Length: 288
Image 1 (tube, rainbow, N blue to C red):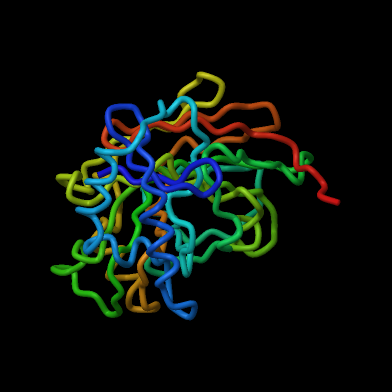
Image 2: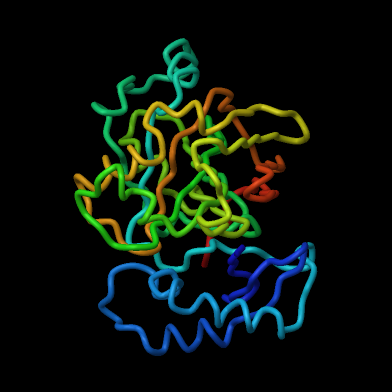
């Protein structure tokens, strides 16, 4: 199943290029959830509600995906985690960079998984606002996994049991001397979407191709089979430090080819199993 959030916080199922509205299911789940719960209520009960969601989707009206605005498929992650230096060629390109001055630990086990602010999470329709046009802001294309079942100290053998689904992700970063999480947590700097593909539709998460282009020029083109810490190891690693909750987002790392973007650019990210999203880069607007 391809589950999406769109327009004004509506919930939908994507079938054959159309979005089928199942918002009444979301409303019922949210109304019955505990305010103090950890994580996203819809993701938490997806196994129990999935059949009802699919039944409603078959009966509901449909809208072409070209006519909706996709939001993040997760409304309430308890945390957004990201794996640094998880592709060897990306490590090499960053070690060879002369235009930026950053503290760089080339071993993911030493660098650890870092956190991004939940408020930085957006869907592809919301765009990426550039706050510091005088500084380098770069794209990092990644496959993102979404936790479906809570767990801590998860074993490798049980790791995939805790995954709800997968989607595309952009881990945006402004280069500088500040702490990494600080520079990567600005509004719009964690793009996820366009929808979540449930885990049962992915035969092997360590064999997912993905690519990114800017203004039609391909910059990143890789596959999760090049990950240093594969999907299972990432889940195990993260769960040694955190309890993972339903709806938690985990960026799995970016390959070589990261590059700068500016207001007016258009980023396209695509993966045959996960879909395609177009994201506009724009200037930051000062809110009154």
